[in-house]
Image (cartoon, rainbow, N blue to C red; front, side):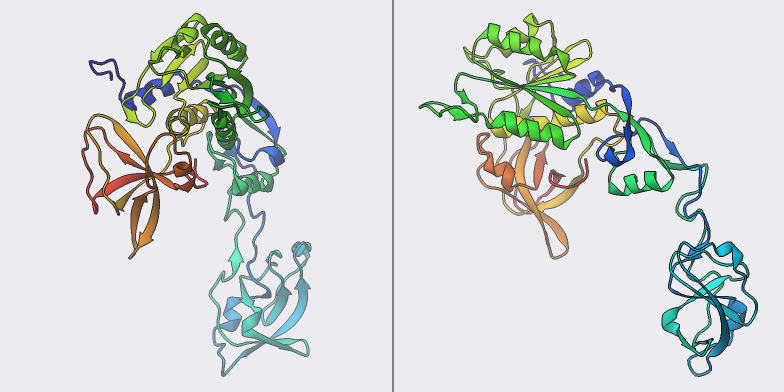
Length: 412
């Protein structure tokens, strides 16, 4: 939705961007190298996990009927007839009434046994074991298929493979898995004032922190980055660099998207054959954001101030990357918290306030990181969340309940 000033509101901007973010193709990768990737299809098990009934404890495989009257004062004596270790062929063992088989955690339950009494409740002497309590049927028994059943869905399409997911894939015997291809993201900085890492910092120049922040963010969310360098404030140079980026899936620039005399990104983008979909977004920081498309290539012209660059990436580029990789979960967690200090605000734009959440008296509270200038990158380093204030809100008083978006956590 655009207002009369040709501005786009946050929700409308995100919706438009995601509509243009098409899934990448698929590829097979080794399971051991699949962490962080997104499944392109459901994973269905063809075996049970565990494969067989097994012991959850070190102890003795028993018949629970033999121990009905066992107590600390009157322990029941059973004859120990054998021992099963984890990995033994348990099919050759058979338990008879009045007997017990010593068993280790993970070992298969022998025929005739229906329970396991843990070793702490027993005393063994001269080939007998004395059991000091009764057991319920199937106590300390892990059943075949208890974790995963053959024919059932193990992991859904769009699931991000983490450590536990990788373990599940290995446990059902997969060596390779099909995932979505990582998008290739081309990163370009613009501006006469930008100096790269290896350049001498002359008077009037600033370090190119945005490019390296963006590289890190792109890698963090699973895509691949390629640095195009710096384009000076020259329309032809910016256009040519954008054209160089057409071999990627996404192009990100920082700087040059405001309305200044030397802000040439919009013009260069059109000359490179892109259609401009969004030019400004009613948010703070990050209002001057340009989004364009050319076939399946997405272009994000992010503002040059470092905080604006990071927040614009988090709110728009990150979800586009995740959607392209087939992720079924792309939203960061949003929670309610009590505001610990007042926040001034004028209605009209959505605000993203750098903040720190904490627990006090069992409730979630949040405080700002201090000055909120869009050039104060340390405020992002100090923050573990963003306070989200809606467009219509005015000044927010201390003690008000606000939405916070978590930004430093293992979730997407």
